[in-house]
Image (tube, rainbow, N blue to C red; front, side, top):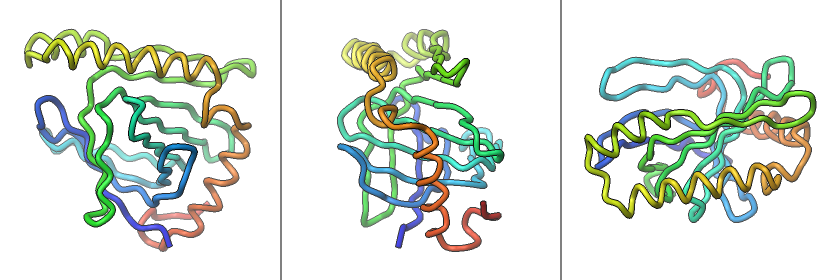
Length: 188
């Protein structure tokens, strides 16, 4: 049975930024998969809350320098892709946590005419934080390299984008059925 994992995103050097729950892990190709729906994200510093009800995959690789979310609308259509540039996440199966240092750069994607269109967001935030928080040169170089890999992986339709999105949606909905009632609120 999938377990509830607490995801925590940190800002440099190690300040908690966002926190949310997802269920898993499920094995993927060189990664761990988690599912979420009806999730509340807490912005730790401001106590601001953000709610997302759409079903979503959280995909975490130990070595790619990014994590990815694929979500689907209530009508079953593809909602989008969100890629976080981050240091390799720490998945602790005993504590049931996934912690990662968010390096500000993000990629968003959506389908347009059957093609996946992506754009980089938060570049100005990355530049500001790199200066204000004194990112070491190696960290800034890592972030830029990871961004290049993510864009290349998306463009090359590397896993998980090598499968039809409808397959991901169907598997996601089946996995959500395996999660305990009450954690994600309403069901598909």
